[in-house]
Length: 306
Image 1 (cartoon, helix red, strand yellow):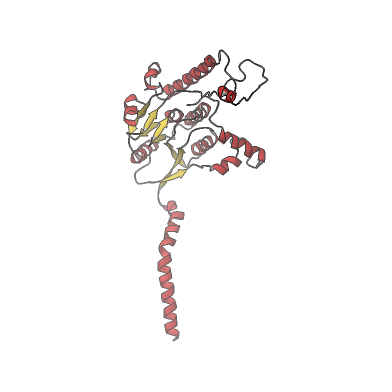
Image 2 (cartoon, rainbow, N blue to C red):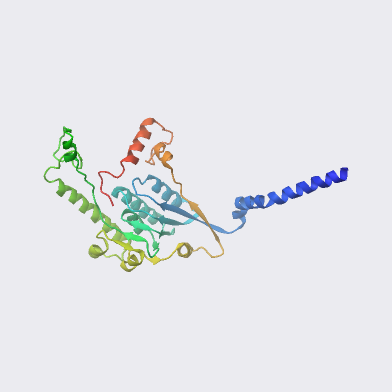
């Protein structure tokens, strides 16, 4: 009886081992396999939304550029544009870091859309790859100025403002514009646009500044058209991105690539986390949460927009 009992126990443990072993070996490989298999880390930063704050992107760019184990950066760009200041801030940070770390290549892939502020950022990278049917371009500036004065008048609502400075209420939708406001707004757009195209032309010398009326008049191009316009460098897919990264970062085919994703905050984290890199993470006051919520709610109003 004892021998039968021992046999059954051994059989049970053997079956359990066979069931558990594959998962155990896979977990061990994931944990320690990279230590014995040659590999290279490449950072991934994704732009998937309209641009309104630069803080998260700047933090991730700095982290990847300063990390000597990250050999290259892959930018996934599916961005329709965003606030002018945010786009320019990210572009400036990117170009500054590229000068400080000139041997760390940055390759962009556009699957669907790389427009306006998204293109501003992409132009500062080393190589832009897009699908043939992606939307690229929309290089221009606008300022939204809704007018609600007539609407509130219908309901006999009076909106009174005490101000100093003739143009202090410019862009206030509840106050009728005064003479000269349109010219001021046009001047803001023109100057912001000039900065935009100058930065793009410096980053991509193949785009001539005196031809900006051709490639930067607000038009959207397909990826195939953008290649002809020299807005991008190559048509392709993720395989072409990997090939470019390997070539530019001198990664041999024998080495595995470990893709390292950038940190991304969800909506709740955006409410409680500081946008300014200099702010403390320890301050979880109601004031900050309300302030961040208001930023998220009204992030696209009363500012130059790409």
